[in-house]
Length: 314
Image 1 (tube, rainbow, N blue to C red):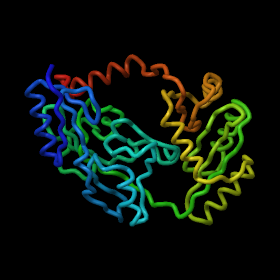
Image 2 (image 1 turned 45 degrees about the vertical axis):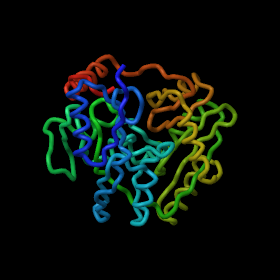
Image 3 (image 1 turned 90 degrees about the horizontal axis):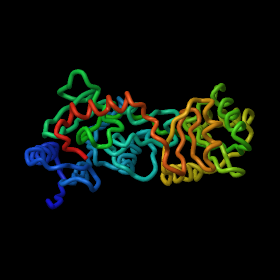
Image 4 (image 1 turned 90 degrees about the vertical axis):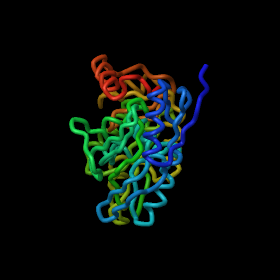
């Protein structure tokens, strides 16, 4: 059995050389996890390459962690509006399609990526989107690599859309009595003038709660809290509810999608779940059924074959 080697490139050129060598030798490569003959880490690619505060954009290497990037952007009163559980790297956020409560307002990683630079299985370096020199016609690499699980190529650099850091944030928590009550409250929020940054349903029988995160200027947030309480009831709570939400998400064993009315049916199937009702997704306590249609799965495999015909990435 061939021994497992580890590669920790510190430049794009080193990453390209490592993958080119693995390809020539017919070795399999896994990124940030066991499974390949070569285990490749982006730990050495952790720099902020460019921060254009006036344009609300930044270009970073894929190995930088969210906490480090957040600290760097805070000095300019800005943030990357990704808040998944833990402290993943930017590359992991894209490859795993990771997001957190703020996805309700700001979207998933694909909505915040302006451009990427990737290294393909044979060592080819390709870039697409904003803040790049060379573009690859025919593919939006930034969106294509979101959720790719490291099976199309190695993400090495990412250009990101930023947002102003809010001056104030407050949380409203509303008790939820039943599946129908959860649906009713979610529809009230959907049909209102409220602009929450997050709407999470922590579903656990009699302890179920709907949490709203309201952000912005002090005056605007106060007005939003007042309007939300008049519409939904509930009480204000501390930011700890969002730590709890991320903890539920992190310990979940599956993620499912559902149409708006499907919230009632979904909650009826699971005694405990973290749902994002206005997005149509829920993190559940047991492995979720495969919801990918056969046609979409076939397309994904064809895309993978185009990017990695030798099957280098595992």
